[in-house]
Image 1: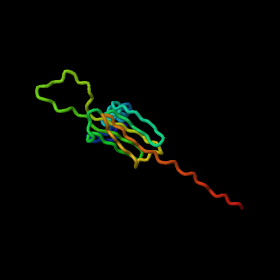
Image 2: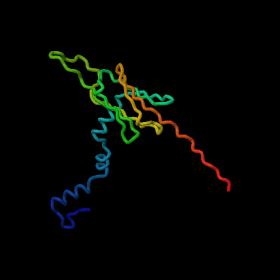
Image 3: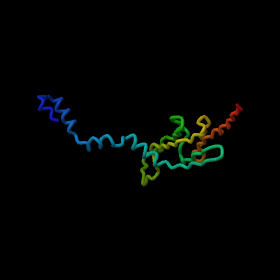
Image 4: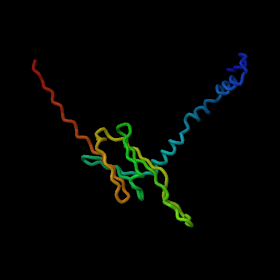
Length: 154
């Protein structure tokens, strides 16, 4: 639809015309592009491997965290059932005159998210980092007692 045909030739209407004429492909491309935050979080999650174990009374999430202090690691529960383990690994203090010949250890933010099962007790979570290995333990809720319903004879 050409707005100029209707006698609307002002700059505002020209801009509207341009927006209306934009191809669907361009619109899909801009709306479907991942955000910077999404890309950063995806990289942080991909570079943080974890083991998950199930025990009779708990779940254990095990992640290697070499060289990190407890203040560098955050363990949180989001939306009542998502365990989030995150933090940041920084490069140590550099001494004057030293330069890197090779850098292979990863630095930067890390994060992992785990959807907890229904029987996870989010009020009973503990985290211990020992010898560079973080173990987050989530206790299981006890199974519900079976409910007995009295049968009446009519």
